[in-house]
Image (tube, rainbow, N blue to C red; front, top):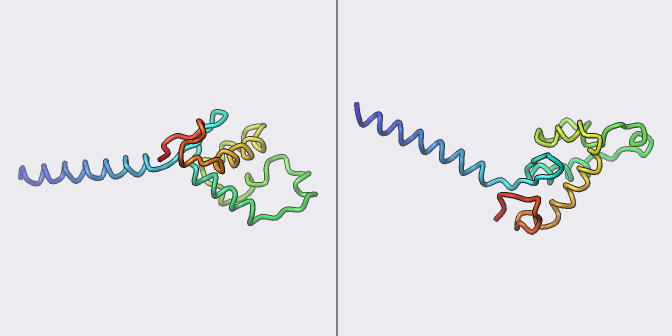
Amino acid sequence: MGGRTVAGLLSGAAVFLLVLFQSTESVYIQYQGFQVQLESVKKLSDLERQWAFSPRLQAWSTLPIPCYHLALPPDLKPICTSREAASIFKSLKTIAEDNCELCENVACTGCI
């Protein structure tokens, strides 16, 4: 009976450490009060390349185009509520291109 308890605790601890390890693997960008994953910003650039909107539609849009994309990563969606959403997205993409994975930008955390 005691062996099962110890085995259960060990497996529970292993799961906890695995989840903790996976969450620390991510690189985050902190900017203007928002914290987003570097991978999400990379997906943002991919989404923008996929969607080619007409200039007329962009002129009528009150939100940046990525905010209308259903595949927008969940951690980027709160940015769409900001009045500066377009400039925040632009800045995040610049930061992501600036070797964020190597911690060359102070906005990046959790990098290698």
